[in-house]
Picture 1 (cartoon, rainbow, N blue to C red):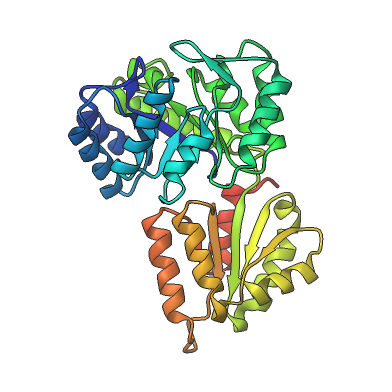
Picture 2: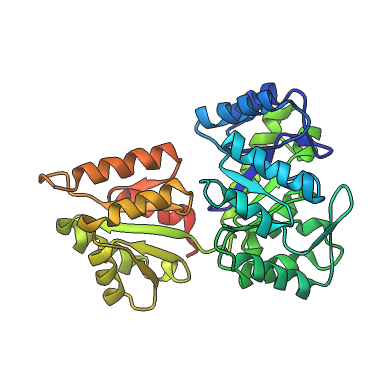
Length: 355
């Protein structure tokens, strides 16, 4: 995730009655990450909502409402049944992962001690950070959902502490109702943030009236805040053999901007980049012909890449053409930026990387 705005079609911890109509407005506004809760509407309508989000090319989220064990497990079962992309919240990671571990959804539980309704994050910051570290160490936990602005202490310091402690993405949730809070979450290193009631209530400054104007305003604040984001990006790098020298030159030209980010490379490309720029963080996959392209495809499908840079040579026949076509299809399907040459890669670098 490259610092994304997640719209929650919820109010007072319930999915709003007119969620389907509001979804059409949200899509018109341009938001692509959309969530709801498993209460407020019958399961048949929630299924239709999840299907509509998917059909529109969006990413769907279900957020856990209650903190008692029975309700939390019911939410987890609903997430699996509705086939959503991500399950947010909850405090019983061991029990929930017993249900979700064999399902493709991504799971982001709450760190810290959660009490009350609406939920409040309690405890000293050190204990919350340690809770985040323990949760992130679990195999089937893919990230964290931090109720940062429901914490009574130094919120920016807490967010920064959690983001620096864990290597998995952290989504900030709860009471993000002002542009300055969006900026604070970006500076802390968050992968994204949720807004629900505040957008529905129209509290953000916008150029017009109505829900669509709110969505566009929040997306604008998100774009500007993204330039201040400290979250490491995950970029895939690959190249056909005849374009590896071009990719090497591109990496060296952007070496300063790439520092601190995570580069995932197919085998020989990874070795070349490591030799050219040994200070960069590089994860090597298999060589392209031995499955590396398929490994990249899997990372696209699970939402674990912020962009794919694949320097392709269109002038010669390649045995890897089918693999490149498959990567292109997945990138479009999962709304992942794909650059096939230096000019497009420069645009990705300008949009995603700190210079």
